[in-house]
Length: 133
Image 1: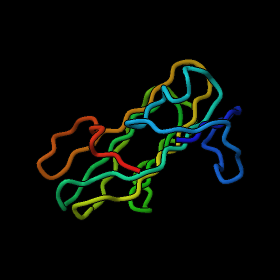
Image 2: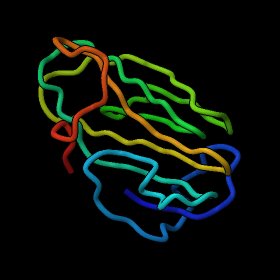
Image 3: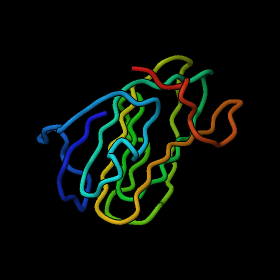
């Protein structure tokens, strides 16, 4: 992940920002921001689809977030808001696929959860074993 400081009302253009710090986490989580306010996070890596098929990914965030899988935007919940969940689907082959999650926290409550459902998978949190870099 990469951590960026700033005041945001929408997801920023991460290409023009300079990360204050970065690191590796077992799964994307707003806690990578250290419990602060006024920051943004970019998580990049890979996600493993155990079987081919259509997967539904769900982002639940407070504030804005966006998910791209295999280079395609799947979910976007931008702006300042309380915990909100949105879902989107994508067909994936079995194996590893690039993933990027963008997130920003303004003030107040915060949160970021990634869930999925797919072939043989009931809706639930994406397990840590599904992530790689």
